[in-house]
Length: 285
Image: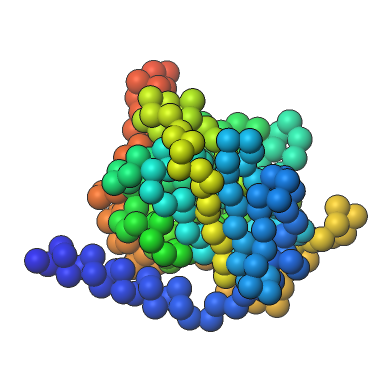
């Protein structure tokens, strides 16, 4: 009973935090639809964006701005029903051979089976830092908030205000950290049935097409950004509220709860994958 009450209190607190102070802009102002030949669209006077996937093509969009640190929120509702073989990707990435990247990827599943939330961090073109989770709710029934808080100290992945993963700045221990390359936000809905669901064993069922994912309530109020590669990155007036944020004691408790109860893969415990020793950052969490 005590554990159940604790979980309920953590979820309630996170829900309240998500509702406080959120401001949203127009998708017309913030994003460009970049591919899909009409399969991605903006509705409701710029307040709703949808991506669809059919047998011919998926679709996607990217931000007009580039970001170098920020607290960025997006509400998403994922593909409902039999979503096996589909991937809804939402991530930040720079360009070039030595790119940096911060990933949320939602791997679809057969009806009644849970989505897998796949996360990764790339620095200088190197990834292999996967952590995967089930969610504690149905991400297809309603919109939920997915947040990246990226500052010079750490990258915090949050779902409905609850931290699920932290990637700390371990430059002092020789681990590269994304701090010099501005990144754009990208999102897409695409077919990946060669690997996405149960290692590729379950293929996409095109009789369920078109598949659709929805987005709303984008918020980048707290960020450092630029709109052109010829501009300097500038930070907003509220930068002190997030620029040096790390997890507090309550959030550390939330993180432990998620990782104890919902994490299904952690590269930092995969000794078979790294027989010569775990990556350096795994020893400095």
